Length: 278
Image 1 (cartoon, helix red, strand yellow):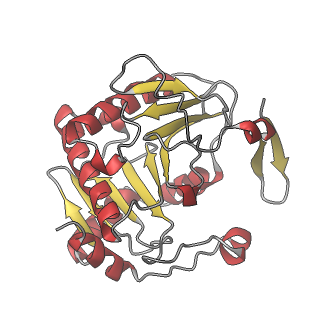
Image 2 (image 1 turned 30 degrees about the vertical axis):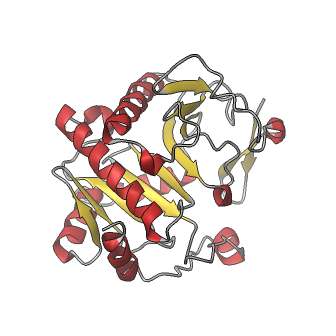
């Protein structure tokens, strides 16, 4: 069972999850996801949930050794459909205050199971990052996300890829090395507000971006992928590799002062990602 404790100085919740200490660390000889009945994509209740009653594992493929960058566009479409249906279910629950669809990829990020998967957390509160972002959005007369996407599109220098309905770019204010986003060109709140054509197109550009990341240095990129469905749908990629041989560590300045030191110039990162995999 998890326990919420209030931090009076930072005015935010801390979640004590001591029961998660017992989760398996990359078992070499067995995989619980491979032992499931036959499936294509699968929603698996997390055996070690961070929150009581609202943490799922999304299995991308039955192939234990398949990387997310190796998934077909069709397979990504099935993952997106599962993300969409589960998001809709959780968002309808009045006890759920925020739905977070995400993926941790790579041992450097702390992945404990190598089978290709992501997760969905149903938060009983709105996370502080989301509160801060929504407060900034509320100050803008126009949609702040639309303004950001429009400016990046006009300046073009940080654009990585474009599809029929989405723009992928390294934001001007990137905090992580090789950080990028995929923004919906149309103002749509979340996955379930996208049309069928937009979802199909999202699968295409998502597949392209994952391939670019793994092609960048010639090995699977350790990263965090987060889907934002609060006001204007976008995806955030937060890599932890600052060069082919060096990891990015969130040390004292980042962790204690909440001030990010960006090791790679965003315009240079965009140029490298644009050419990756060509």
